[in-house]
Length: 216
Image: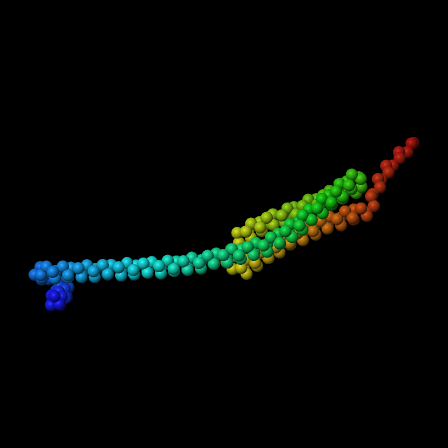
């Protein structure tokens, strides 16, 4: 039996090296069966190794993808946090700017009431048109400031926060621009108030008496 096994190994090696199929047919049936069984076992083990290798590679790829996804998620989360921080920063500014604009609107309403009262008294009628024109110009500036605030809110909402420093700088510039507009509104309204006070302090011109016709 040992002799047959030794022969089978030699024959198997000879078959793999020379590829002569005729030798296989000349072996005893028992040896052929053992050689075939061994080949099948080796083939099965080879397939199992390949399968295990493939599974290992898939697991490694899955781990790499999972790690990559976690990194991307961290980046997105950090980006969202930056956006939220900048948005909260702007929300405070927006509220303060909105209050300032609203206050200028209230001041314009009070000024308008004074002009209406002056007009109703019939005094300084020459200055009324000038005062109304100045107030209209101031209200145009108020509308411009409101529009700038709305546009600023839209800009901040869509702002690219990849570079947080640059984003914050842009938010501050928007805030500065709107403050300049509010400052211009206030100066215009103060000018109207000054004109109203000047008109009140100036004496109302008395009507010139018409000459009395003389009888001849």
